[in-house]
Length: 248
Image 1 (cartoon, one colour):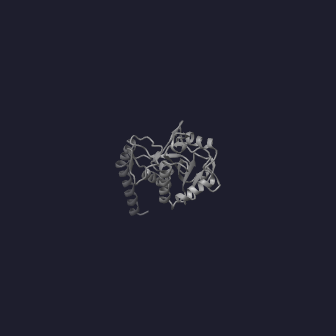
Image 2 (tube, helix red, strand yellow):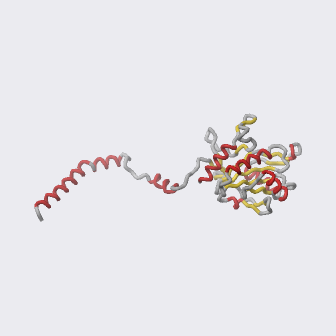
Image 3 (cartoon, rainbow, N blue to C red):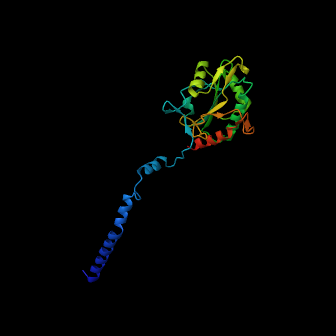
């Protein structure tokens, strides 16, 4: 072995010695302070959420669990049996109405047509309309009603069935009030609210100024009207939230 080679080994050893003396204590010191650590939780979070954009929309808690659409099975305007499972994989809006309603239903459904047209390019968007007057609102009546309003979305089902099942779905399943009232115009009274459902069947909504879920969206005031009786329209924010869920 030549002297030149010996000098090279000696030089490398000297450099390694200097590096160990100067830098290794600094690295150990930084690690002890937590400056140089592997964040396991962050690594796991990135892995889980990779490629998935989560929205900021809230779930609705119920008895310690996130509230989900309960099982249902009804007949739509085309005579098809539609269940909650037909909506899985789709973002959709829920309403309770009746075709002879002389007050808020026409306004609600005009707003839903507006929403339908906004998302006509999305095959995984739908609407579920449940009649609270199933004795009158037969399949043929519902079909004529849908045609009258210009319904073109194949995932917009106007459904009828047993009165008890519909009322349980409204009042218990969604907690959206619906009931008979001989003194009310049209003989029925009901909420004018819409519920927003995600692709997995969970009820979702944005949060209010206090961080609490709004739960439902006002369906009777259009974007053009803006505000009525001190209530601001919520069709615009419903559209925004539908778009968020479609990206999830």
